[in-house]
Image 1 (cartoon, rainbow, N blue to C red):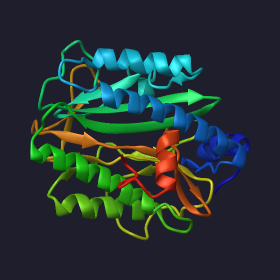
Image 2 (image 1 turned 180 degrees about the vertical axis):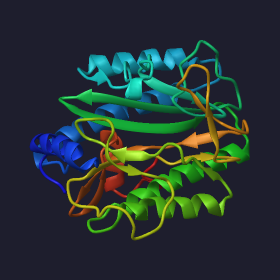
Image 3 (image 1 turned 120 degrees about the horizontal axis):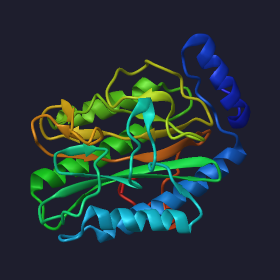
Amino acid sequence: MTTGSKIGVVFSKAFHILTGKKMIIAKSQKDLDKMRAVGELIADVREALRVMVVPGVTTLELNAVAEKMMRDAGSIPTFIGYAPHGMIPFPFAICASVNEAIVHGFSTAIPLKDGDVVSLDMACTYHGFVGDTAMTVPVGDVSDELKQLIRVTEECLAFGIEQCHINNRVGDIGAVIQQHAENFGYGIVRDYTGHGIGRSMHEAPQIPNYGRQGTKEKIRAGYCFAIEPMLNLGTHETKTLADKWTVVTKDGKASAHAEHTLAVTPDGPEILTLTKAQKLALKKGKTETVAA
């Protein structure tokens, strides 16, 4: 079931109460314009942080810059105070997950060091809509093993996005991600998934990074997804630290994470979390990967 966004929220709540299932809410053209605006805003934040990642910087410093940029632009840092299922409220504007940390890492005053990798996940709310994006960045000179992990994670994101055409299935997204990741022997995180997105950060449907083609919900025009492959050098198994938020690999090996927010249009998937410069480069065919 689908419908326009404002009315869709009402119908979605009623549908959930009656059936126990969440309804996917298609966005109107007006909604999509707002999704484009917030997507570009959070992309600017992401790219500002990317160039800051050098040995010696702290994730607290990265968090401070991200929060200031979000608020200065008139948006709200979506992560701050987020508390699903009775969890303690998340205290930061970004999730900063270093090395074996997969997602939901807390920012700290510990300087990043040469050879680390840091996954930065961020979202903001602007004019009632959410943009969500993530990247994994090498710190200084990293091993070829870690460079490949980051590259393949970004490739998985690109392959997943390419499946977001009208009348395809949500299962098609996870299927191509799984196939590419397993070609390299990586563990695919199964405890955390991509998701629908719009007026809320997490909407239906859930979008696992594994699956079978031709399964799950049919993809329709106006759907907005946040696709986010999370790949580990070793096991797919995870554990959560004592802070109740930070998720790490069970074997202590490194992880990488990449994410874009996109809209499904009659012309195919439109990546919303790109800067103006990235959109122009993509239009001119100068980018090698949509995940960059």
